Amino acid sequence: MKTYETYLLDRAKVEGAHQLATYKKLGGYKGLEKTLKSGLTPAAVVDEMKKSGLRGRGGAGFSTGMKWSFMPDITKDPRTRYLAINADESEPGTCKDRVLMEGDPHGVIEGSLIAAYAIRASAVYIYVRGEYRLSHDRIAAAVKEARAANLVGKNILGSDYSCEVFMHKGAGAYICGEETGLMESLEGKRGHPRQKPPFPAQSGLWNSPTTVNNVETVFNAPFIVERGAAWHAAIGTQNSKGNFLVCISGHVNKPGVYELPFGVTAQEILEEKAGGVWKGRKLKAWFPGGSSCALLLGRDVDVVLDHDSLRTRGSSLGTAAMVMMDDHTSMARVMEVIARFYEHESCGQCSQCREGTQWLSQIFHRIAHGLGQDDDIATLEALAKGMAPAKTICALSDAAAIPTLSAIKLFKDELTQCIRDGRDPLGIPAPKYATVGAH
Amino acid sequence: MALPKPLTAEFDELVKNYPERRAALIVALHRCQEELGGWISPQTMEDLAEYFALEPVEVFGVASFYPMFNLRPVGRHVVSVCHNISCDLRGAQDVIAKACEVTGAPLGGTSKDGKWTVKHVECQGACANAPMFDLDGVYHEDLTIEKVAKILGAVR
Figure: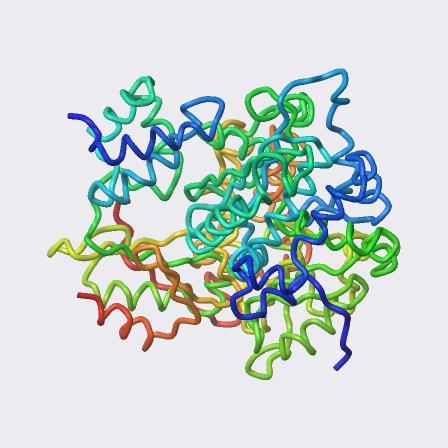
């Protein structure tokens, strides 16, 4: 098995690393110290991020340094600025930020503070999904420790930089992982995404300049500050730099969260890290980056897992959540589950999404249950094309349409046969549901 | 009626974290659900509205948006089984069936003795340890039918 240099998960594997003493023993807070004490200006930190090639790990893959540079010039715009950390991890298949928050919460705080310094924010809000109680409590405890050690609060480490870190909780809504939905939720409202523009950097939380970053994204910042942009830019492929966390789940022998440099193939991750497809079966299909990206066929596992390579295959890296399905999987069933999810999570503001996700869900449900109708595939296709691209306030509608269109493209014969025969071609029975009552 | 003193004292501190008081509403709803019987009653919504100087319907609007808030009474123990893709591929439907069987609760409902509520939820971020459920706020992962029976059977 090939080995690679790791850094993201190293501390999380050490017993007690969630406590300040151990974290510091492992080299923690050196990145923050360098940021605040070696004369690095906020602009220099932003520049370093740009040069490092770091791209956001929340799904969109946008340049982190670029995003930070969108914040307005503080000499012309003196409004209070905020950093919101998106720890509302809820893209199906994604479970990586949790590993960092539970095992290495000080790393999340240190990264957040460097990001906050770069954008000159005076407060950080860490928005943790409500179900992640341990993640929330670990970070909250770490913030307390950090505040007592002058790492959070006024004049951090004796510098003239002051920044508060506050905890916030979500309550189960996927849409609050969308940055403007997250801001509404942080303001104590329903998580309805906002129309853009204005972008968060111009008018975000409480109408103030705001940057929203994913947990894993800011977690990278201390390493980059400490080791230099050139070190980071030397790892990976042309447009995807550094190490990243892959979540591999579904029909594999060893599902898990693994750290790898960009440039390895999905095959390598599947075979060498996840121990191959379970039960000696073959891979039929997979999502490379959560359920919001296009499905790929089993034979596509030769693809390099990075932004560009996946785009050439018609999919995307998303959150690097590989969901693997063996050759005993009913695709009608898979799509029933996926479509039901988006129906449940649509916030209901835009008619394309509100109605579209309901229809997709109902149609996939009836196909999976042997009640498909002759024109269902044509209807699904027409619906999905009416929902995307970019027809709605946020991308949830697209996220439902993309897997739908890919399933039709790759598995049209199977779905057609399922409709014609009134049962799955593999003979897989639809699950019998327990009675659904009100809740 | 009003909210219990310890809760309002806690909220008085909480609102200081934000430039606007109502930002604390969602965290306050969590605390109310934890402390006041596992659900958000209409009375709790009225009390929260009064505390935050909002209309009760605004509090209802927020509470009803978020799946974690129970707007009806629930059992003394709540089992939330993930049924999203990674869990479904590894037997979430069997976990749901077993949880309902062991507890006597219908899916999405409460057992007759008021002890259990079993519901299904979307992705809980435990995909690499599927299937899973959350029992009273604690994750139980890498479940098998046997483990489901054992874990739920041990709850008093």
